[in-house]
Image 1 (cartoon, rainbow, N blue to C red):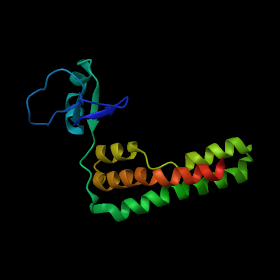
Image 2 (image 1 turned 90 degrees about the vertical axis):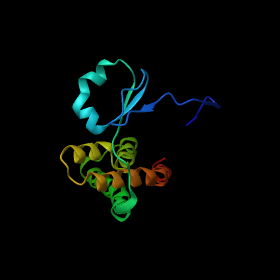
Image 3 (image 1 turned 30 degrees about the horizontal axis):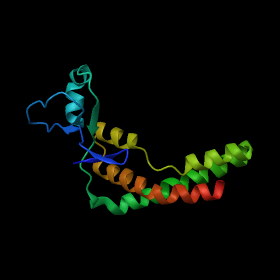
Amino acid sequence: MPLLKDGKLTDDPWVYWVDDSPKPNPGPLIVSLKRWQGEREALLGRGQPLGIRLTNIEFDDWKVGLAGAILCPVSGILMALVAQFFLHLPPEQFAVLVVFGALPPAVLNYMVAEQYQQDPKRVASIVLIGNLMALVSIPITLSFVL
């Protein structure tokens, strides 16, 4: 699929290496988390750009994802307010704390869930929908703190 780079369409150099297919030509490579865990050293030894595909996102858990997308920034901002009550931060530092509190769930959450087999697809839904919701929640938060 072509990419838009510097206002021009260009070829996408990244190749997804399916787990049971032969090794692709040198270049930027995307591998599954399973292949990464099994062949980490060899993949790093290639000396080429490397990406890891975490999962195929499914929207089966969209309700949980939406709840997480709403609760994560709301709880983060509430914790920032509690912290301000005790810390009495200057306005600039408090504004930064509020913005950090409004950030969506991190991809790290998915990686830990995948590693320990703790419902990674559900966590992936929370992370994906949370990051999509951040397109709305972060500008709203910035409008209040700036």
